[in-house]
Each structure stands twice: as C-alpha cells, then as structure tokens.
Length: 236
Image 1: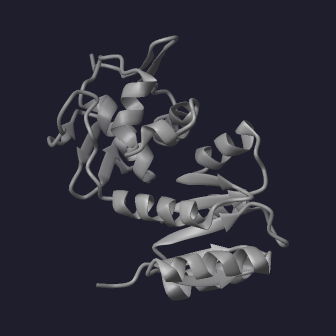
Image 2 (image 1 turned 45 degrees about the vertical axis):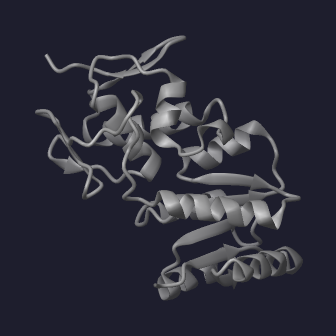
C-alpha cells in the first residue's frame, strides 16, 4: 500500500520539525517546504495526498496559495495558523480548506485530523440527512450527479467541487423541494459534524452557489429558508 504523502508548507522550522516527527511516527511520508513557491514545485513532484498549510508564509498568503491550488486540484488542505478569529476560519473554509487548526496545537490532534480527512476521501459516499445511506444518483434536466465518479454536470458543464460541496449538493438534490437544516446538512457532509463551526455549512453553500452561477448566472437553484435551512428548487 502506498504511504500517504503529506506536504507541509510552514516557514517556522521548529513547528515543521514537530509535524514531521509526528507524521513519520504515524506512518506518513512528510515533505516540508518553507515558501509557497517551493511548495508549488513539491506539489507537482511529490503528488501529496494532503497539504498542511500555514496562512502566514514569507512570500504569499496561505489563503491565496490555496485558492490557486483549487483551480486545478481538490487535494485536501488543513490550515495551520496563529489566527484564531472566526472570520479567518470561515475564509479558510470558503476558499476550499478542509480543516483549520490554530497554534499552539497538539501534534497528536493534527495527525488525528489528517487521518480523519484522508479516511473521508474525495470519493466517499454522502450520508443522507435521513437515517441510512443515499445510494442513488441524481438526474434532472439541468443537473446530473454520478456519485461513483464524484462528478456533477450542471447545464451541460462539469462542476469542479470540493468533497464538501459535492456532498452538500447531493444531499440537497436527493430531496428537491425539501428544506434541510444546517444540522442535517452537516450530518450529510461531515463525518464529525460536532467539531465543525456553526457557519461551516453557510460558507460551503456560498462557494457552491458561486460555482453554479459561473455556469448559469441567472439561475438560483439553492433556496435559503431563513431560520430553517436550505432547499434545492424544484424544476417547473
């Protein structure tokens, strides 16, 4: 079995050394870079399974680096930063981050989060808001979802979604017209919904809507029901 490669983008050597030791102890193969520029080369060379990314890099913002990465890759990203405010956490999620750990941190917690993210995997099935599993694909005149291929086609064009965006889209579209609460959507999209922030669902719905609008600017298939949750609009 291939050893999972973890790319660490961190400019503080002491923090990087702690992570490298913890990850090696847990059986991972860590690759360390000090800057965003060197991380680009390492990403292309080593094809990591997950990126641990500091926000405050010497040559760029980790947020900007992640946004550029999301243009061509859905590899999981775990932000590691001294920024503790909720808005920074939300921004990290909005731009495609999978998790967010603040400094100081427990190396064991970081490795546990790495394992949890890798277990989910981009092809992981979506849990239904109702008890049990949703296994059927979704097909409407404007949207086709193939769960096995982790693929969503909207108005004839492929949507490039993160794993959480895909899970939320599938949860909404398997029950069109039904309002799903944030708690239900968290259960659908996250294996450990209790560890997520209250605004996590809102952040990912926002990015999902933006990707839908890029294809169909006049469409608004995801409806907000204030105080209740979200629903996928029934087709006329």
